[in-house]
Image 1 (spheres, rainbow, N blue to C red):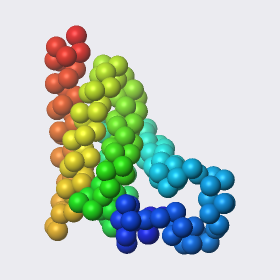
Image 2 (cartoon, helix red, strand yellow):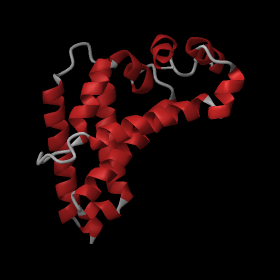
Image 3 (cartoon, rainbow, N blue to C red):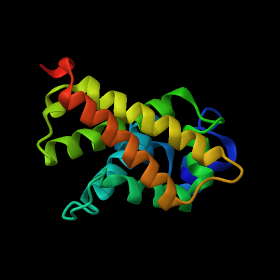
Length: 170
């Protein structure tokens, strides 16, 4: 699915093409998934779990998941261009944004941050991260993974620091 998505884009991709590439019949596909969106959701859930587990024990002050996610995106840049870049479909971008939201929530809970009780704060942080990542995958000369992680960490920490001190959480 990912190879085809990078080539054709999400909206143009059909279940039959996925089945042909995977060498399975449509009936086998439907035993496991109701739609290509279900297949995508499962893949994003696996990615979320893998990235959330990376660096969970480090003392890094920023968002633990950023380095792993950015590294994965750099390795699969064509796929992520199709997923969240200019060529993305709305549904794919929305599911990716939800996955990043889940990663932010996991991070806030891990840190016992007061904003963990307020999902709109995590949505705000995740939205900013996803928009920056969408720009990054499309940029002709993007910043390095380390520079991007550092900048996103600083922005997320600033937003969360302000949210923790601000009246919105009182």
